[in-house]
Each structure stands twice: as structure tokens, then as C-alpha cells.
Length: 193
Image (tube, rainbow, N blue to C red; front, side):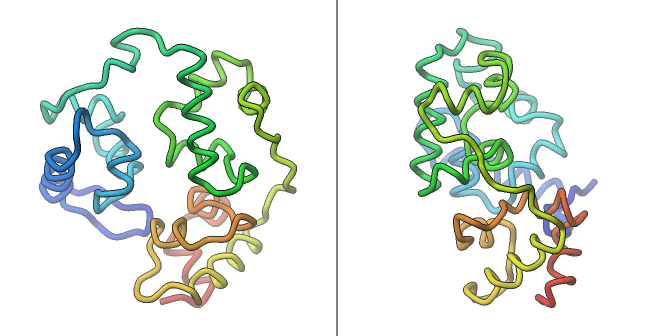
């Protein structure tokens, strides 16, 4: 059985499992989504698509599940806001922390914020972060961003490489995939090999 990465490459399930376990062995404590994004070979989306959820993957592979989940103590508002602020700081620009970016980089589910605060915008306001003031980006705008970022990346332009090298005004790879249809299609339209 195989699964797909967001750039269209097929990943054998055994390779995915081996990478997850190797990454978990290299970190202190339970493997987080952020640590896997930083140290793993594949996207978190690939893991979730294969296993159903992050914690289902951890359960199936026998990995420790953090106590900061629905199975453990309820997250405090301060913990949620601290993670949102830390993610904004990591992004380098608070305007980039839309729910798609947080979904890829943050420690918790965006739905937790929506449940707790009523909306993503209200969660950002509670964290004293500016609301998103960007005009929704079109598919053509996404393709243009892929083209610009590709010029700054040596080698294959993966989703992770794109997100690492994109400018604050560029959409996240998740947004590109959502608008264009797939990472492979976005690269083809941008004329990127």
C-alpha cells in the first residue's frame, strides 16, 4: 500500500513508517507535528492521509501520545495562545499565520482554536496578532509565487522547500495546492521541473 506526498511522489507505507519511527527516536519526548515537519522526510499531510489523524498514527505505531490531546487534560487558553504566538514568531511575519499555515506548523488543531474562541480571527485577536488583511490569492497568483520561489531554491522544489524559502507575501504550499489542485500541477504551470 502506498500514500502520496503533497508534491505527487508515491511513498511506500513501509518507508513512511520507518521515517516516522526514526524521527521519533531522534526527538525528546513525544513526537510533535512541528518536530516531524522539521526532521521528517514527508509532510504531515501524508501521515494524516495514511493514518487518519496524527494521534491515530501514534497509536498504530506504538508511539507516545502527548498528554496535551483530547485523550489527556484540556489545553488551557494560555497554552493555546502561547503556541499561536510562537508559531507567528517562527513565521517571521504575523500576517502569514493563516489557518493553513498554522495547520502545517502549529502544535494543535485549528478546530481547537475555533471551538475555544469562536473563529480563527478571534483566536488571533486574543493572541494580540493582527488579523489577516490579505486579498484571497488566485490560482494564477499561486503559480506566480511558485515560479518566484523556485528561482531561489536549488534542486527539487518540494512543498517543504517552498515553505522554507517563500516570502511573507507568498501563500503557503497548502494554499497553493488548494487553489491549483495539486503541487505537481502548480509546478507544471509555473514551468518548474
